[in-house]
Length: 247
Image 1 (cartoon, helix red, strand yellow):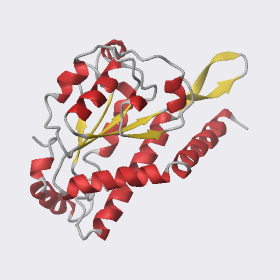
Image 2 (image 1 turned 30 degrees about the vertical axis):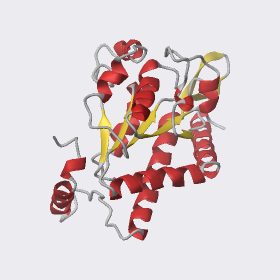
Image 3 (image 1 turned 180 degrees about the vertical axis):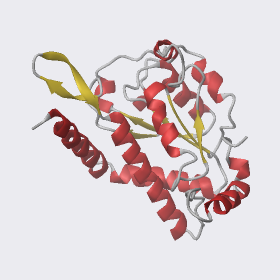
Image 4 (image 1 turned 90 degrees about the vertical axis):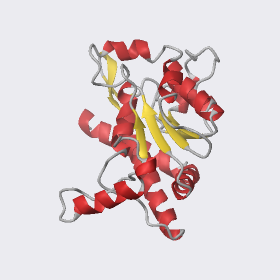
């Protein structure tokens, strides 16, 4: 088997296992987000460096929920230069607290935090601060990876130990899944593809539940389809108090 094919096989295996073994958890995540939307509470998603790709995946997206708000922390996103700053910044306590202080996060809200290792200070601090504020914390992480490392937060906790609901992406320690003969480094990281699949599955669950509850889901239509711009304008107007990325 070629290494290219091996990566696809491993990604498919991780995706299927993660869903099959956590379908009830994903359903609960969907329920929490659906209930927040019905009650006009807020929904946020965040992550540091490559973990932030899932925040980009979920907001302002065709077929996505218009009310999912990303939290992009300056110095922790992939547009930071030099990019090595992100590795240092995500270990600094106080950054997560400061970032959350700039968003309207409170009782009844939901926040999704993605961190593969779950060990760094920023995601741990965000989870702890969000719970203090009364928000429901969903994390996406690799439990096996996280259990094999120590926390870099003064609480001694890792992300999976702080969240109300843990979604395991089943990424291996170090994230990369494909080994090469005679070469020490692995390639083929799994967390992004598996995490994106799990969270998009969650979104589909949210839409299904809202429809069952008699609520029209605030789902974006492609702006490149006829009628898309008008459809999206209506949603942005209806949910303007819960959409922060347009402000």
